Image 1 (cartoon, rainbow, N blue to C red):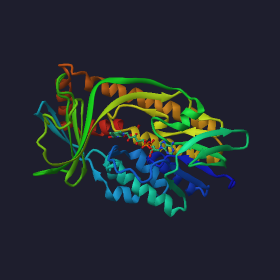
Image 2 (cartoon, rainbow, N blue to C red; image 1 turned 90 degrees about the horizontal axis):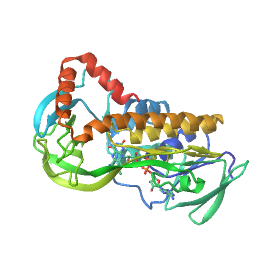
Image 3 (cartoon, rainbow, N blue to C red; image 1 turned 45 degrees about the vertical axis):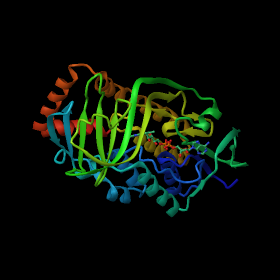
Length: 356
Ligand SMILES: Cc1cc2nc3c(=O)[nH]c(=O)nc-3n(C[C@H](O)[C@H](O)[C@H](O)COP(=O)(O)OP(=O)(O)OC[C@H]3O[C@@H](n4cnc5c(N)ncnc54)[C@H](O)[C@@H]3O)c2cc1C
């Protein structure tokens, strides 16, 4: 065993951020990833200010900030009838805005930082099992067994690391159909505008978030995200559509001995507010710091509390949006009116939405 080496299981945004956090502190780290190649799925889009600040402190934010789009405008509508436009560009300082970048690009830029720092990422190596004692952890992956000081399980919602530890992942699935579409768009497309339409019980909510100069992501509370689009978006090419289930779950514990859980391995919740990936990356920063300082138990307590808070807040925001209640459009119109006319309200809204 190389003294002090940490095994990071999973090369998603959480695992890569953990590797950067460890490598920056000069701690040896190895990332294993069961896929043979990097994922090319756009999944999470929003990168929130606390995440940018945490990455900047690790010297890993510059390229992400340069390549991301900045969300500046929000269009609110109900079943296509425009309620208003909210201009967010004056609400907060440039370094506190919401960035948008497809997750595969975020991962690629993080991988480059890991490699620059001398961290190793091994693709095609699936974690299988672990056993630990007071001195270290034996991990089996890719047909070999090796000893490590610590393991961080960043291996997603179905986390084999969590399974190996026998930690429960408690929660529930939200009933109903959900789908996403990743599309190229033509016409008069504004790459800094987010569209939100709560629809009704039949159509469900629709949200469109720009992920490139001529590319947008649509998330909808129905089987087919592209059916009956309530926004004036001209779809020229469909890159991908997929159904998904919203699950609300949290691991009962984030730490067992020398093994830590982070990211989706530790929690999952609704995409409302775009916090999933961000919460995981902040777990990762904290996990690397905990290994460096030896404050592993504190990591478990603090990050579990943060995860529970995020789940509470995102559920509080999701329930009315997905309820189809006839009063929701009126509530949204009122919020839109206040946001449009009050800079203080825009600032408060953005602070609440992004500074979790
Ligand atoms: C369709 C879709 C849309 C989404 N949209 C958003 C969004 O808009 N905003 C948002 O914040 N979040 C969104 N999410 C959630 C977001 O993608 C996740 O929160 C984020 O990917 C979590 O990162 P992670 O690194 O913890 O886990 P993952 O990204 O799942 O990475 C886990 C990695 O572990 C690897 N792995 C698994 N098992 C093993 C093993 N045995 N050995 C080695 N490696 C293993 C996997 O291959 C994977 O690469 C979306 C998710 C989906 C599916």
